[in-house]
Image: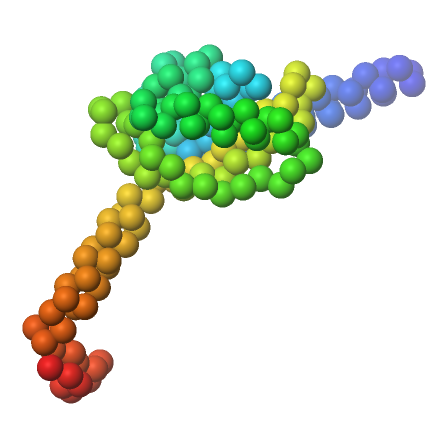
Length: 171
């Protein structure tokens, strides 16, 4: 009788664990943040739907391949590989870090992505987990701001400034 209760308890715990796993999978796949999980050789083990959308490369194309083989512009691949190795050599006890990089989309265009990467311990070997999102809009705004600032500095007399009540401040 005790064995039967123990088996029922194990079955309930297994069902709960499986439901938790499905919940985690749904959470990852419905996230707006791209997610890539890589092993120590750089092979992609996990690639969510947002990663597909943001990078324009299908999950089938990504799984099992290093990210630098298809989503890193050629001129940055060596630098990217070195950075990847440094993260793995630092070990999983080092806090993750945030970085912005240029990614190569499936259509050949390039986009800036903001990434947060952490090395996580796993029974089958450490995993690099990276969440990312597109920051092209912010980069473009920054570029335009710098252009406008340069124009104002070069030709200050060409601009008229008003306050929030439309009162003339400076011409």
